Length: 214
Image (cartoon, helix red, strand yellow):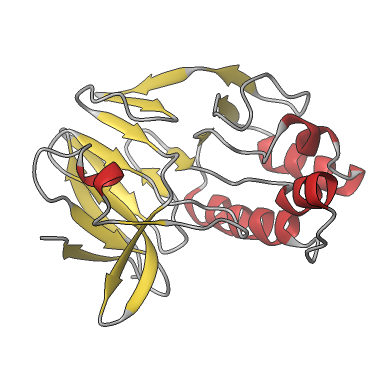
């Protein structure tokens, strides 16, 4: 089994190698920072062309996680699109793919700083949502029992850096899920100031592995 089960704020969670978080008792799957349409946004704003396959790769990964977990609800934890124009520019094939993933389950788009308004792609648009003891929002506020994204944390072990979940007793920060997303090292001040003590990291990749950051 490549997933890692752990407990956070009295909730049973499962970190997946893909960077998704599953709440098995609530049948909720959470992913953060998909940044769909990033190649479109970069081309539109800078003229620099990137291979336009990140939407397909990210949705393929999400589809595999949905098939594995069979969630009743999917939470996209903000910055699901690289901007609102990128959301509107999704091809019809990609829109239909999203519709198939949404079928038969509740789908929640959490507001992010890249996508601060509603998108016409099905699902509900919310600023935050509470599931059990946990509050899901895009940017950490310092409140207890908080799951957030935004920072794209990465952790390095033995010279290799991987996207990672970071968590302590009261807050959990999700890794970026999207194909064309960078990352912020776990030791940087912007991340460390969010935690009362050095957090645990769960590194993604072939297997979800927990390691201390101290």
